[in-house]
Structures are given as C-alpha cells and as structure tokens.
Length: 121
Image (cartoon, rainbow, N blue to C red; front, top):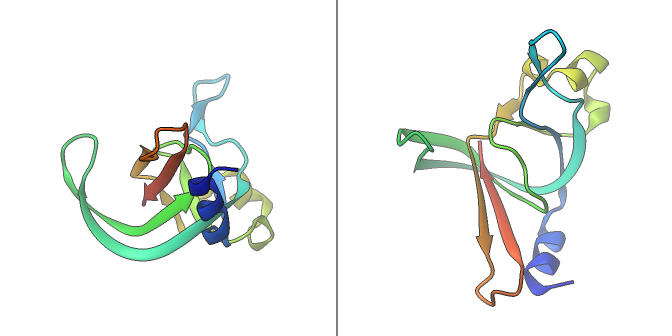
C-alpha cells in the first residue's frame, strides 16, 4: 500500500453511510441507490469555497475518504444500523444526511498513482 493510502486508511476511523448521485428509475423518477457504509475522517469545519457553478458556498464539514464519491450524492455520519429501512433507501428522509457539494481528488506529489480524496458538504 502506498504512503498516502496508508495515511488515509489510518485516519479514516469514522463510519458514514453514502448514497451515490440519484438516478432515474424506469418511470423517469429520480431516486437513490440503497446506502452503503464507508470509512472516512469527518471533521466538522465551516469553510467558504467556490462551487462548480462559481457561487460562493459554505460547507458544514470536511471529509476525507478512501474512494471516489459522486457530487450530489449524500453522506450521513453514522452506520446503517442507525437508520430505518425507508431512510436507507432515501437519504432525504435522514435529518443529518448532507449533499456532497464538492469532491476533490488530488494526485500525490510523487506522481505514483496515489490520490488524496476530500469532500465538502
């Protein structure tokens, strides 16, 4: 395992539930795929940033993850067992689930195929 991956694996001590970007069902209705648990490092931190549309936006948390996640996906700090079946199927029902506003994937300085991944919600 590479050095940045080793570091991220060590600090990603929190569990979150992740729902990818909504997709259309056979009737054209947008919905989420069932949530899955991921490891992360969740840091409550207000941060001002410019979103993809060029608007100034404020984040609620900065989250480091081990895999690529979708912007417009949703994250909840907790486990699947903290949620009911309807909430697992639809993150909009979860009070503390937040939309991923920005996903950043930064290559390692060593250019050896390693990446750091950070999310703002």
